[in-house]
Image (cartoon, rainbow, N blue to C red; front, side):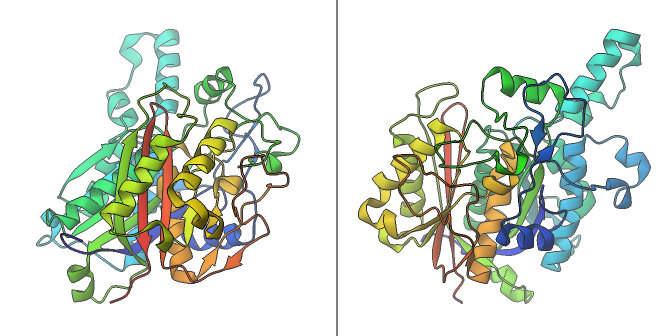
Length: 414
């Protein structure tokens, strides 16, 4: 591998199954679903009435009231997660190091609720009643910007927006910056909060969301033949990446190593993946090549696993293409079965869980996989949490526009 080694020294997660890493991980390994009735708005006239909302989320406990009023919900979530991340990493950015510490965050849509609220105000009260904070509240990069303000990171600061692959692309670029020596520390991952009337109605119009309203906890069913769409979720997953030299110099704990990144495009369709899985396979192969690993070296895959027929079949085909007979020996899990689809944040949260799986030697199961689709014949860990010594793992994310990303995480050996 050319360049510096990159390690994961901090993790944070705010998800539908917990407002911190400890609770989220505990509920994940117990197979507890975070899907329930929508409470963030009146959904009585909507086809879909369920989502993966955060529970008892109280941002005012962490952010001063004046600042809180100027943040969309997705920014609030990101800022609080960054505070948890800094605490977990046991790291404070000094003025001397600030220029070598950056933030690259994935976000697919940004402040959809802010857009809806101010559009309503514009129609009802006129243009002079739109707040000067309207634009700063809604833009997707404000999550990374506010994290920079709160943590003091003065290095690269940007947001990747590539639909449901946003976070994994962000992690890939953060990893690359450290590997190439452009930074020593990067806060990275993804955030999203779009459980709003426009968000839900838009996906309903596409026939993309599950309408299993009477059984919310069973609605997200990756790789299962009885799935009827994905379940929208919200939350944030952050990782602190450091060069190995920097981490060792400060005596940081190390969860895992980032050892490869790959990205590709289907060049096929606006929303549907190439059904052969060729673009997905290309991203996975690129990650393997970047990390100088053969397919037979992979122990575990954290799948994109959205609970939609086209994605589930395409990803299964891609896995078989890349790994051949070895695909049957890989433990594959789909976190979305419990947290729903966090859109641009997915790769961030799922990377956090992948790093935890490597550090703890535990693969969380895929729930609700009762009747596998005919072509979904791999080991999706449908029989509950499994103990496994994981040396190499892939985390996959694929998004609208045919954009694909795959990150390889490695058990750290000094």
